[in-house]
Amino acid sequence: MFSALQWHDVNTPLLISAWLFLIIMARILFHRSNVLAKIFPESALLIVLGLIVGLILDKLWVMDIYLHPDLFFLYLLPPIALDAGYFLPNNAFFTNLGTILLYAVVGTVFNIITIAGVIYAFAPLYEWSLPFIDILLFATLISAVDPVAVLSVFEEIHVNQLLYICVFGESLLNDAVTVVLYHSLSSMAKIGSENLIREDFVHAFINFAMVSTGGILIGLVWVCVTAFATKWSYDVPILQPLVCLFFPYLSYLISESVHMSGILAIVTCGLMMKPYISGNLNEKALTTVKYFLKTLSSCCEAIIFVFLGLSTFSKNHTWDLMFALVTVTACIFCRFIGVMILTWIANGKRVQKIGLMDQVIMGYGGLRGAICYGLVMTLDRDAIPAKDMLVSTTVVVIVVTVFFQGTTIKPLVRLLKVKTQEPLQKTVTQQVLTHSGDDMMAGVEAIIGMRGSNYWRRRLSEFNHNYVQPTLMRTPTSRGEKLMEKYSALSAEEQRLRLLERFGV
Image 1 (tube, rainbow, N blue to C red):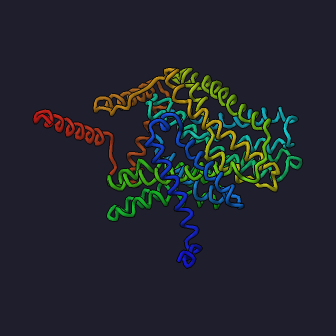
Image 2 (cartoon, one colour):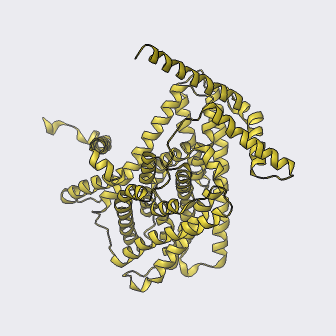
Image 3 (cartoon, rainbow, N blue to C red):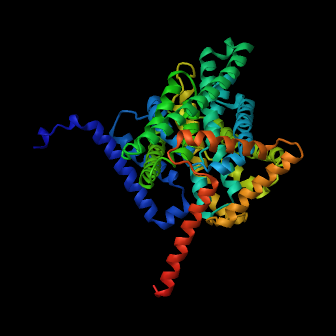
């Protein structure tokens, strides 16, 4: 009877379903176990799952399973980037934009140069002879930080908003900058370090600026397209969640097709479309978008981490203990140095300073994860003969940072007594005072003839309210209308509590 079954007709979807089944069951058991969930980050569980499956397949299957570059760049990376952009706190992000850009852009370049310098300094001790351009390319991909484990700890402990937004915003833009630089340096690696001239570096810098700007502009165009589509589809609410998920993905694909930054396009689209689609979607559609996007992003990250665990048993591994040791040390050391230097620069201009304990946590929270592994697997073996050794080293760095730093970040936050902030819902009075403070500062700047950040924030807010919102939103709301909605919600909640108290419920 079993010999008559046509397994080959369903082997591909069945294999995918089996993987998802294993991931789902492992995550359910992990979160049901209070001990494991309190000690280890979820990414560590998924790596262990991949290790177990990889060990079994290594004994039973001669084929080598690996993460294909197209699978990573076209299907797994976009949902992760869209999720990060969509759920980024807009107000806190733009308030601290200067500091975040300093960490994400200058900090990423600093990490790349210093990590590459440290690795190159110990070059005579390695088994492989690596050109400097290959080391620079490897330093670029290994500089991508994965904040998932750290942010989950932050949310559980309720760290202060400044620390949270700096880590979240930096990691988001860090990934985008890393991917763009990775593509530029990959092209240079194919040319060969012996054939590079000064014009190649100038061309790479210009290409980086053009690719980044082009990706952001394409993302902004698709913000408008997505907002218009949700505005016009109000009578067909079943289509609205699909628009919010599919159109940003189109921005990614179109950007990649014209050699622009797809990750910057989809991050920009996710970040900027949220305020406009909220006025076009009903509550059920917004909830659908929120949970489906979180589910999709979580599944993509889980698949990458499982592949990482599987790759430990790859037949193509080449281990260089000294290279791995130097790389791990450089990643941790350079991260701390970069955070300290850049925070000193940022604090010179900031009113609310970033404290020493916050800096320690930011430096310690530089975990490596999905982006690093996905990028190293896309290296061209013909251009970089040492690819297998670089893949092996990347696996070591991710495992060390996820298991060691990921499991100790929570005790360290408590030990250092990092400033916390309970998530409280703002009252109407607090909202009025916040807006009044911004308006007063804009007025002071106008009186003294200064056009500072408050002046431009006020101008952009007026332009958005007078022109952009009426165009892109079905029901644009002013600050006064938002205050009235807030007041109505609080009044209803107060009446509910009084009724419950009166009837002794």
